[in-house]
Structures are given as C-alpha cells and as structure tokens.
Image (cartoon, rainbow, N blue to C red; front, top):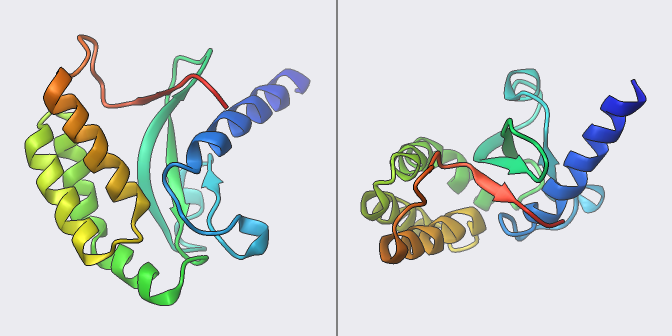
Length: 148
C-alpha cells in the first residue's frame, strides 16, 4: 500500500511539473486547471474535462492520460475548447500517427479560434519540430517526462 501511494505521488510530481506546459490558467486551488491522473470515465461525468496528452513518467513503462479541467477556465475559453474538442482529438490522432503536417494544420486552426489554448500551441511547436527532425524510431506518440 505504501509503495503504491509513493508511486502515485511520484507520478503526480512529474505530471504536475510538465502540466504547466499545457495550460495557462491558475492552479486548481485558485479556481484554475490541474492535471488528472485517474481514468476519464470516472471523472468526465462530474466535471468538464478535455483529453490533452498521454505521458510516460520517468521510471515507468505505462503511459497515463492527461486531462484538463475546463471548469476553471474563463467561460468563453472553456466553450471554445469544448467546441474544438473533436478537432483536437482528430489532430491528436494525426499526431500519434506521425502525420505532423496534417496535425499541425488542425492544431493551428484550433489555436486561431482560441489563442489561449496553450495545449494546441504546444502541439504546433512539437509538430514543427518533428517535421524538421522526424519522429524517433520507436515513436508511439507518448510524451516522455524526464524531469519534474
């Protein structure tokens, strides 16, 4: 029991640090967004969330889903993110298939409709980088978290 609690705490530290790259709102305690590490099915019917990435924490082999609370966003930005959620998922699918040009075009369209969508901006940057360098040989689309 203690070991699994320590593992969970370890994961939260890594994901919380990395999560700042995806959001631009305040911390949860101040009414903003925070990372979720539990399965979406258990939380999506309670609060508004948006899937934003799959990440692998340093020292782990299985990735975890990263979700954004939309309830903490300004209502107009939450609405824009909800309206673009299907496009975001399509763009993400293109991204994990290493179809970076197509993914970039979709993420760019999302970002143009809501320039406070930091997750879309992050994916645009990633897509551009991978178009220049190519995807790693063992590409699975999962972001590797190597630091807190």
